[in-house]
Image (cartoon, rainbow, N blue to C red; front, side, top):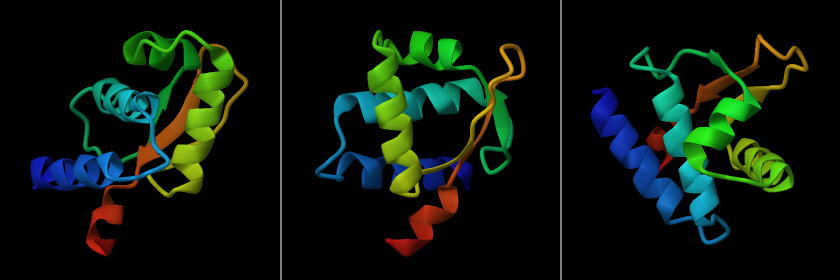
Length: 99
């Protein structure tokens, strides 16, 4: 079930005209970071880890893309300024029911 949901989720994301490869790269990095957990549950991840997995070098690009993913409804994001805890992120897989 999750594979089908993720397949639709990524298909929908790839069709967004305002998304760039960096948006998709962050989404892929988020799936990797949730590390085989239930992808519908929130998890914590650091900016450093996401930037490394997504191969994004610019902090401003990272923040811009996270903001746009959140505003588009692809992720739920609660920032944390704690260096070891990381921000809370949840993939909005339920988004796939709307398309």
